[in-house]
Length: 78
Image 1 (cartoon, rainbow, N blue to C red):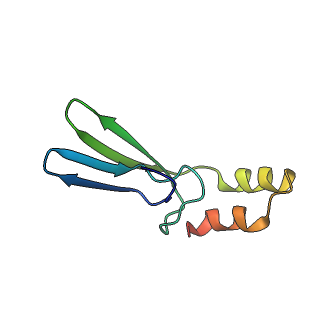
Image 2 (spheres, rainbow, N blue to C red; image 1 turned 45 degrees about the vertical axis):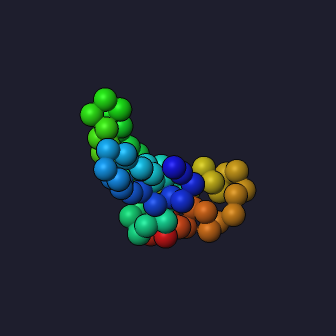
């Protein structure tokens, strides 16, 4: 799953449903980038969150004349 920007893992018996979250534009109150590692044989998923240089991304957004709210929300993660 994707495009919700909210990471989660749900197990239904032997089934696994997960959303890795968002490398950019998070919507869950955490400014770190989110990604997942999926082990298909073990049917296990781990969600990781890592810091990145938000100032650099915001500057790149400004250079490209993107709307300022896109960069501003990176700091708060909402």
